[in-house]
Amino acid sequence: MRTEQPNILFIMADQMAAPVLPIYNPQSVVKTPHLNALAEGGVVFDSAYCNSPLCAPSRFVLMTGRLPSKIGAFDNAADLAADIPTFAHYLRDMGYRTALSGKMHFCGPDQLHGFEERLTSDIYPADFGWFVNWDEFDKRPSYYHNMSSITQAGTCVRSNQLDFDDEVVFNAKRYLYDHVRGSDSRPFCLTVSMTHPHDPYACTQEYWDRYEDVEIDLPAVQIAAEDQDPHSKRLQFVYEADKTEVSEEQVRNARRAYYGNISYVDDKIGELLKVLKDTGLDRNTIIVFSGDHGDMLGERGLWYKMSWFESSARVPMIVHAPERFAPARVKDSVSTMDLLPTFVDLARGDSPVRYVTPIEGRSLVPQLTGERGHDEVIGEYMGEGAIAPLVMIRRGDFKFVHTPADPDQLFDLSRDPQELTNLVGSPGHAGLVEEFRREIAKRWEFDKLTEEVLWSQRRRALVARSLMKGKVTSWDFQPMVDASQQYMRNTIDLDDLEARSRFPRVAEKAS
Image (cartoon, rainbow, N blue to C red):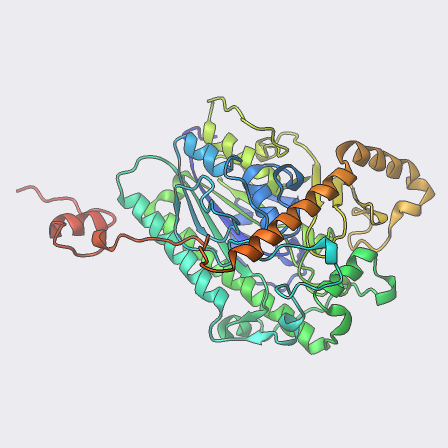
């Protein structure tokens, strides 16, 4: 295994459901040649999860290695405190250049959280306007998803998300070119975070046509309205699935556009990989690919995320560094919370690192090197559709879901991958259910946590409302470019400019 400090290229896709990808599902019709190639030469985690199936909480957990309840990451308007260390802080302290191109959904005035550079703005707002309100659950939030993504699914010439992701990848590629052309000898950790294939389900004609001769599959599991579990019923209320009729054609269109957008992401990954190869950076760059959560895509009558069912909670995870780690498949259940200690272990070499706060994540280096690692995921959800904290434990073959508001759920995923049989009432599993309940009682004080969530929601509601009155000061990140140092300028000698901009450099001829 190579020992020098490696570059790290961390690529993220938003709302990409692991179960629909061909690297996990041989029957999948989704076309992802670049991801397939990464998987063939990398370590693929077959049972990777997010720790909170919602954009901002999942990303804050990923950045900090901490559970949502430990850092106040309750929903999509949560403030990540500036004094909570992230993987960007740790790696920067270890001598890395740290940069972010794309989405991370930071809310609040700190829009860097350890990144030395941000190459783009964010696609989502940085204020507290998207707070959740458990005090008035029956008042549906106007800002949130509805079913228009499904009823209006199809093609587009241009979209908000295409504008964003084209910019994200362009800037990431330029960063890599600038790194190899520059004089900064530090290794880099570059995070490239795209917003596709997140809804709305609209893709360009090019990607729509890639599935012209493909039979788009319909959801495999349908649950009647009266048979839905209570949380799923609340989710259907939140995004109006309970009062919106959708046709089979609309469902197929939504899934086809979603698949098209996965192929778009795959092409963008291909562009990044080509830059690494063209510049020679591929020889010492560890590529990590993952996501923030999945998408139900109509399974069980549900869409988007916000639940602990597999399509919502499972994420892709690949670590590609063939000269360091032999290609392998890892069956252990792991999570994106494990990425911070993994990045630190990859970067530190033999140097000890002291974590200045507790972290719940655990390094994946044992699994990467073929050793025995942990096989456990702990999850928490306090966002839309919940009325109390909704927690999950995934260990071995089983997944246990608990909230004080609803009946417990236990699934044996080895025998029941579609999660159709709740084993909580099974006499043969009574002991296991009791073990999980005892563990949950030790891990969480639900009354205290519920009160913390409610007070956080109430504080942010007042702050959000007040800051929109009078003169508004935006927290949204504003990327700045010093144009005086770009292209041809009279402050830069022409020969010097051309020499430093060309890669590889042309050797000077001897006189």
